[in-house]
Image (tube, rainbow, N blue to C red; front, side, top):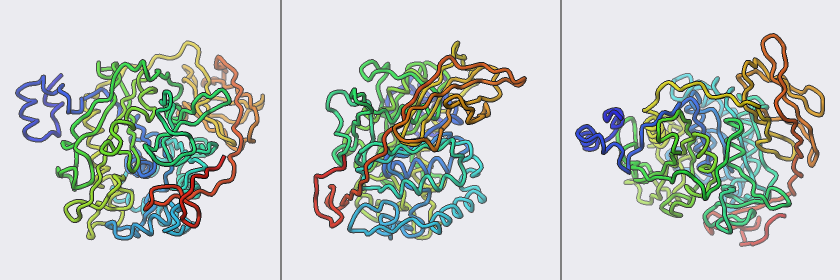
Length: 503
């Protein structure tokens, strides 16, 4: 490997060493230069990481094709209330709504209009990518009925914000589980994750997907909605391990290097590189943002190992980047961020910065993570054509009580796809809209039969190999949970500690 491309963007000492000794470019601690197509990038996040995933996905919408947000809110939700971190209480009241100490302020239509207007203005100035790109993005959202940290109306406002840009067939909301505020994972062997309804601990929960006890796989649902059918590797059979890398090389403020702690980032992040990707195969990138109190400083490598993405990435040629925050509690030397949250309310912005700078491509943390992504993709070269499946398969990627996500391998020569539900044609899907489709407006706890046909330019149909029968989920039980940030535990509406959860 050429040492100079590998060393691009490193500090002077690292650059000199890599130039003199190319072998050092492969040493642990530096992100590798891989054959990654940044135009196939996807992002995900939980809680503050969900807000960051939305910010990052909107700011870099020319590259990001899918956003998965668990317990998140709309773009620029904090607005001007938390400019320079001064009014974070107002941001909590509007963009979380679950702490009785900060009485909920509903996100109004005027609030959504303000968020949209800001995004349009920034796009016009080139501070974020053109918003027209959002029309091709896919949005996967998760909200658990026992989540009292970021309440359901906030999640609904996130979906509503994207509805102004992204078709309904590309937006999915998974709200059928009684989950607490947590990353929901199927990479939970034995009892290594918390019960579904709990909030706290490592904020990584296991939820049963069916009566047989199979675990719901949030990572699989999101990634297959973004990329089409993928292969999952068992946790014990992964062909690689997450590796630590030096984040100090990549942290940026106003285009210049800055010490990570100055912008509440850690010195070290993690990356999962499947063997094929390490060997030079054409690969894609997924960026997974942890939530507050989930940084490695707080829970070690638990999120990196148990979030559930590595299992889907391993055989599917997807590199997973796990950037890391750090708690910061010494203003003005550092921002005030005691729980290691991602910056979704402007704690990194100076009083003289444009309100919302943190949510643009030039925001400190977004720019730093993008620098990491560019480094990973700096070994990019022309990719060979992807092999086509001999018998393209129709698969259910995810299902809720009123939506089903269908995913499939492309049919060679198809210019569009014709979807039949219960024998009736319900959609004609352009080839460029593949490889997934969200069927909306379904009835809870109801079975539907699907058939997908590829149609070539002359109108000839090629049925996919299988017919699919999918049962929608039952509607979630009504629930009104709350969570005290000060007490760090679930509470009642009157701010009293409680252990009660909704079924």
